[in-house]
Length: 72
Length: 402
Ligand SMILES: Cc1cc2nc3c(=O)[nH]c(=O)nc-3n(C[C@H](O)[C@H](O)[C@H](O)COP(=O)(O)O)c2cc1C
Ligand code: SF4
Ligand code: SF4
Image (cartoon, rainbow over all chains, first blue to last red; front, side, top):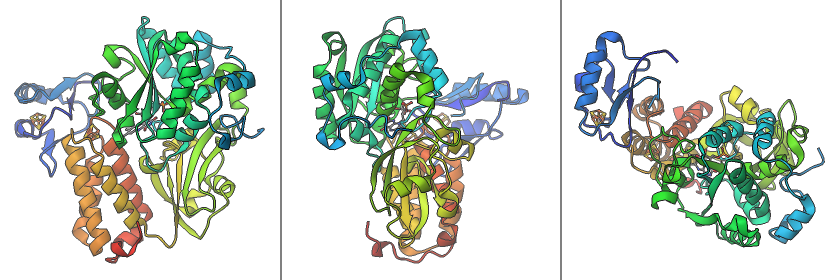
């Protein structure tokens, strides 16, 4: 597992608003049903501010930045 | 090996062994506490509920965090439709399971033991209840029976905790894992009933004895359920490392020529027979080959049946059994089931095949529990094992008996 901060999603909370994918298309795309798919690996440094904004914007607080890859 | 271990003793058809008979036959467990955890570690015992996780690792985590308030859940939900081994054990050898559960309680300083038994498993429930009644007062005082709802995901460990705590058998987000924070926020050991029965014997005879059974480098014995095209389908206790071919021979051999094997049940994977016969029934050996022992179900698909149609039926079941909490699982499995259903019913079409292949990869790892992962790993194994049939499937679903 590579070091660094990883985006993780609480899949029970997430209801597919898709805001995160709009804010951070570099790392998050949506599947055919509108739910986010996160690019594997740690968030690159230059995208951290955007990732933090996406975390803060998620209306149901489903998105988080974690030190280990919970891969969910 | 001198035959059976978990299933040794009085004839299985004579019903459940009483506490008095059980104690007379096996005596008391000699190992407990730290010595037991160490013996479990050396034995290499892994869980028999489906995930094949190390028992000692889980026990150590709960022991460290317990502070005298841990909870032990004996998992007898047995939600896998093809599996019957947990029910056989609960109805015939309930005291092996209870020994394991109370040894865990003592060793992990737990103050609650929950016997979590599938509500539809009537005779298992009755046998476990009767057995609990026969135990000493000090054990009975901390134990109770809880019914697991008749849903596939009710046996998942966080769902078991959720049911015990709040009466709702749906999985919850992990981490925290039940072993860190489970029932009433206390560290909780969720352990399959077969695993607990092995622990009861290791606590009597030790890890060296446990490892004295096993073939091709594997250790111990496992309960397996053989279903499908064999002459005597049913439950067998085999030495770990026994090949599928040997196990099928113990079940009377195939009843007609076989085309494929389903290894590990709905949690597992299809393999073509030419590759499957030589596979060893052992969690570690199967994992090394990218497979999963699951809860020990081996299904034999006769060459006269259609693997695509059988896979479509199982996918429909798995989609219906989603707890509908996570989008990728609820919508994804439903879409996958619809797509393979169309191929089965109306015949192959390129668009559905492409969707199946893409979604089977995209859905993985995107649920709160492993239910969708099990479903798509199973589906991917079908896409490769039955690749030729998928490529030119006729519209014939309805001609196949369910
Ligand atoms: C969808 C799903 C269903 C499960 N159903 C069962 C079950 O019916 N019985 C069981 O023992 N384990 C079941 N499990 C596995 C449990 O989550 C857990 O790993 C197991 O009970 C732990 O005990 P073990 O380590 O002794 O196997 C299921 C897991 C999943 C993901
Ligand atoms: S913004 Fe939040 S709720 Fe919406 S898709 Fe992203 S993680 Fe899910
Ligand atoms: S992954 Fe599926 S079965 Fe598991 S909690 Fe989510 S919706 Fe329920």
